[in-house]
Image (cartoon, rainbow, N blue to C red):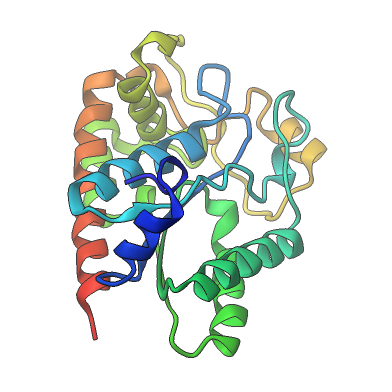
Length: 241
């Protein structure tokens, strides 16, 4: 159930039975020469929408922008700072808390958001003792990673991965763009990287991946695994004491 497509009396009625809210978050950043710039927020949004519909739980509008400073040398990418993301998440949660929501489950599509989200949760929970927060990074789910290993072996990579490209092709088959075979450079040990250094090390934006192996059918399987696992986590989170 999409919060943006309902009205306040319906939300007020919902809150008499449940205080659970799902919040999808991602980023706007390059995903290699054939990956969608919106990959991270598009996947988290789709998962949140489908899980919310399945469980009859409200889903907040997507936080599309994330901490993506290291991608800024690629056209189409943009970013917010860690401090901005922490403040934004804290204030959004505080507003929903004031309205009556108490349990907040984030579905995240971007690794650069992880530390800022956890910091925001820590600050928020300090002043909102009745609140509960939870976070699922869909691509790090062991069940998803196991299936990616079966499909892609050691060339799934670390950014613009075979798995995330495959999932977007499942969600948006009209955007499928094949790429010649070949693994991108493996990640260097130095991290974090500035934008120019990142592009110098990874000229086409990929990190260790070979998305020529991606297909929409593989993406469908990965998406369905993530859906089932996160749905169960949301259900458990919503019913826990």
